Length: 250
Image (cartoon, rainbow, N blue to C red):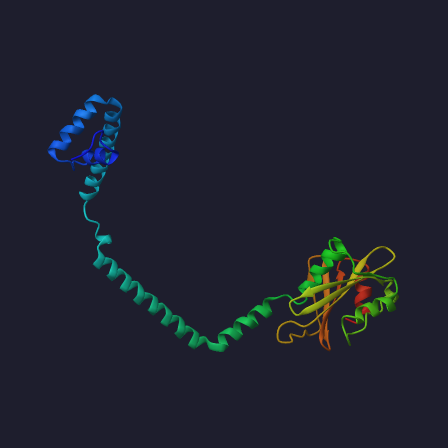
């Protein structure tokens, strides 16, 4: 037996058809005399009907074979086999290629890199565009050599370009993957600039043969000495370019 007035639990039981016949009649008499409670119960009944309709539609949908447990297990089994096969192929490829393949890749990367490309880039950023400020400034070759010797022991001496009208005016420390690098900027009376660049050799002590290459408006003359790679970067289309090349004995 339910108590009067009926509680919310009693009313929910009425909506869900869980009351005895006698209790159902008592609730209906109560709702007939209490319009607010009757309105609330009707809203619950509508919600329950919507829920039953939705569930009924879902239960009557055609079976999805992709959701069948046996199909799912079979698909996972095939996927596992395929992944194992791919791993086996990869191991075979590694075994066949081995060190030779990796070494060939490294040599390809090294050969594809233009020699002393960082020297040319440093010239453009510092001497041409002035994006990076100087770390040291001096019009004295001896003072500039002393500054350079602080960071690069037993390196080649700075080239003497006074015969071509150039003197060192500024120096800038830089960084590479192999260690510190530096660029010394020379300038003549007309404001023309060239640079001397020093850096550690690349991976596996990749020293450079004496050479020359042009990159746009710039010419790089490069070589290697004990422990370091060097480059002189010269604007190629200037009257001083040929004089400098003769002075540097290239």
